[in-house]
Length: 92
Image (cartoon, rainbow, N blue to C red; front, side, top):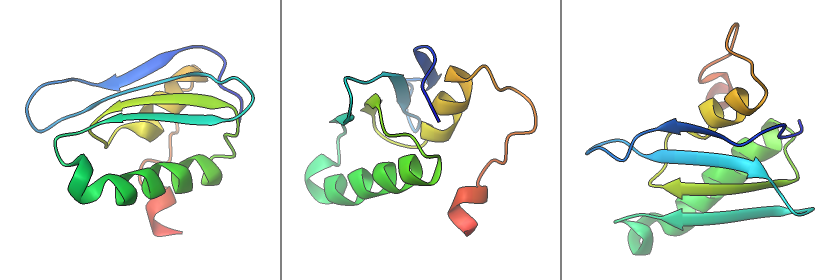
């Protein structure tokens, strides 16, 4: 899946996160900012990479302040607002 435009999901409010996806530079780049980066950074990055792989996204820059909204940001970049299989990727 190609990132067609920059899109975001979430907020920077307490107990949420902000995810922004934009067209990459030919690869996957992840910029992660999290209060739990040292404890869970590797796990968060692995979750991001697994989600991108399942969505077949190979050229993207992902900016995340904490993590939870990656799928929403990617679908919004496609202008896909209906029939989104929320959470389906987690159950494959």
